[in-house]
Image (cartoon, rainbow, N blue to C red; front, side):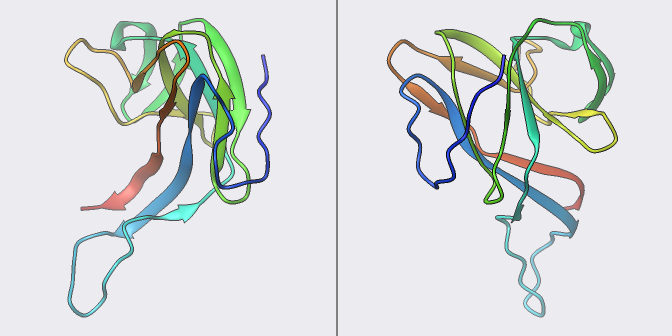
Length: 138
């Protein structure tokens, strides 16, 4: 169930998902006195990839969930630069980040109630950058 991540900034996955995980916290409002870099700080985290799940299949409230009642497909860890990648079969998946308190972070959903969905098509890789921002103020 695990994926491997090479210590590099570019992707090598041919079919699956890849991207960068960053941490944002504090005041993110633009200010001429203190400009903020909206990119965040790269972080190492475990990323859990499930067959696509909806709000009916989770416990807790967005963006932090206590449990996912879905099929865990793979787990991968981002490296020190925040980069991750994972080979996946074609399909639709939900991507969650495991936080230190054991909760699972995802802050995006679509009009069908799917949480942080990505679609992997045959022969293609999908870029998904994740900004962990539950401690940021906008």
